[in-house]
Length: 255
Image 1 (cartoon, helix red, strand yellow):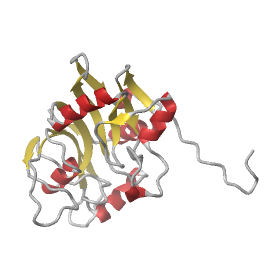
Image 2: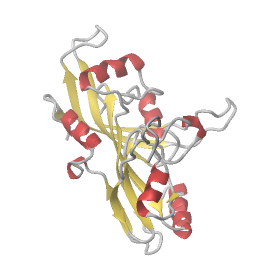
Image 3: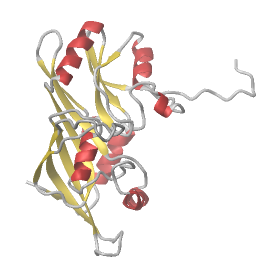
Image 4: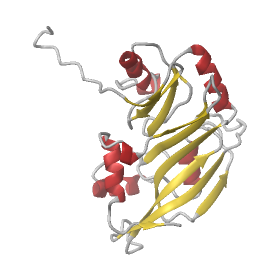
């Protein structure tokens, strides 16, 4: 028993497993969790890799990553050979990743963003890397209130983002590049607008969701599709948040 003067250690919840076999496991990564420990967030206590290892009682290998603020599908390998095969497929862009984002303004029906990027912390003379994202507007909403006084309403869009390359913060940076930053993006978005929407939506968060991932199985070669569909995750708070957002009156679905 802990001495009465010692605080009770925080309880780390189990991760929701979307799919698993003897070679790999797909989990739902909650927003605010890091994939693994890093010195950049020394105060953080929630890590997917360590929690999943303890939950399954075996070692796991990361094969890709999601930003701390992003929720959704995350894939891990369960042995070294599978990890190497999956990492090679990610490196060769032999995957299909599908995201949902809530963004500023009304995005056009379809936008092809071909805008090279270099790492955020790279020196000025570092070479840029090819980066491409296909954006599609799924729905639009006009909030009947002005945030800056210039317009009588404030517009947002629900967007599908399909990156064909895997640069760090690619979707966030590409949406900023086309002047439709993600709501809640503290690094690449607009701070005053983020705070304005946080007051109306009841929370401050990055509205970016990794909805689906397609990749060939590392052993059989069979094409697998993993989904974090909000309607199939009623026990996940973030899924409830997204569904509450999309239940707001006034959304106009796009063709």
